[in-house]
Each structure stands twice: as structure tokens, then as C-alpha cells.
Length: 140
Image 1: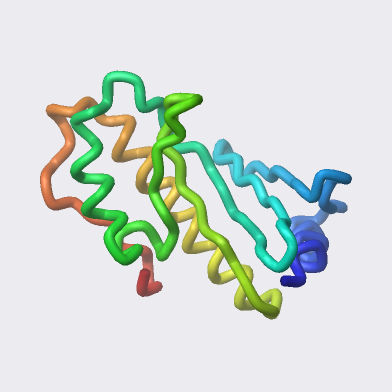
Image 2: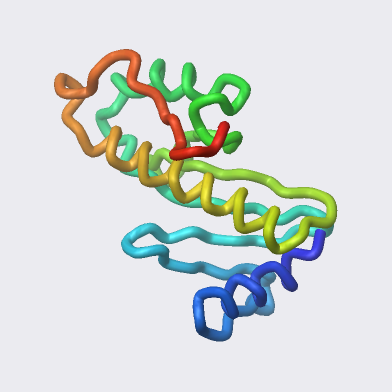
């Protein structure tokens, strides 16, 4: 995985220098949404926290349904970090990617982050059943 190169190219596209730390991590804010990149051997992890999971058992079924085959998560994985009590979204990239391919994956990931943050921000009683993540012009 050419993660370090992709992160450097992302920085150029955003207009500033961006590189992995000595621990092979890098965090970037897209507006208010932080996305963390972490390189492990031939894999590049893309991760984001979505919302506190404290008192949100009501969301578990919906998140599990959305997670099935990545259909409503932009091909990423919705999760629960039980140690920090937070819902998360992550995607693991493998193999060589062009910057264009990486940018499409990252755009879809950010759209999923924003959708699920908005969904989780609604009170449980205000969350419509059956709403799903449908990215603008992109198939999940």
C-alpha cells in the first residue's frame, strides 16, 4: 500500500504539506470531521469517530443493518469502540491505488461519516426508520 504517498498527494490537493508521523499516523479535519489515517504494513486504515455510544442501545440494530455488506456505510465498517464508548467508522485499503481512486474512496467515506454523525445526533424518537445512506452520485 502506497499510503504515505497518497497522504502527501492529499495534502497537495488540500493546499498544505501533509505527511505521516513517525508512528505512521496522520489526522486531517474536513470541516468539523476528523479523519485519521494509519499505515500498517500493506494496509492503510481510514478511521473516524461518529458519536458517543453512551445510552444509545437504540441505535445498535440500525447500525448493524447498515453495516451489512457495507451497503449503507459507503463500503466502510460501522463499529463500537467499547473502551471509549464511541461509535466509529473505518475502512481498510490494500493494494496499490492511484490518487484518483483514493480520492473517490475518501470522498465516499467522508459522506458516510457526515450521514451517520447527523443520524446519530437525532434523538432516538426522531430517527426515521428505514432511512439509509445514499451517496450523491456514487454507489456505496
